[in-house]
Image (cartoon, rainbow, N blue to C red; front, side):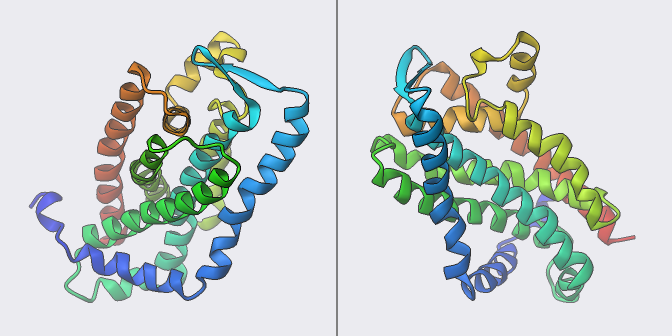
Length: 261
């Protein structure tokens, strides 16, 4: 039986379970996406922005705060989806035995894992909506193109949620999550075109950055937030779609292998 036939709308039961847990402390959980853009824009916009007033990007000149604001959303999408399906899912699987309890119900393993990844992507959308409200107050997002940041957060959330779940399937203990974080997440954070244009990097770093999913998520966020669309927009969407098509089935397969021994 294929993976596809083992998935049904019952995966929404897993998604709903995580949503109910989230809602129990939604006020506290809303503080990071509410305050992070303010802190970053204050530190990088007012601080570093005083030294770098404008940035040349994609044939145009934009202010530095307008350059980094969309990148903050992309970083939040990556972090929330990845950490939700890595650390948080590992805790539910290994320590809380939540997956074991779910497996005693009619839910299949694939539905449990797909529900977890979908919830990670949903959390990325929630965080994006909160950050958009804050950043829009500074006039750094152009509408209506900026509304596309929400479906982009879902696509990026699925991509990084799948990647996080693959790590959950492979690491033997929770301490080893440090490896994908330092080897996968941190390099993208620094070299994915987040805080300075990729054109400022040496050639080898620019070539490497093209293969990093965060690079495309940042470019798409910047494109939608500034209302500029071109061929690179389609390339970024295609890259993230293919990345999802590769990581999601892999995550389902590896987690099934881990949970059913």
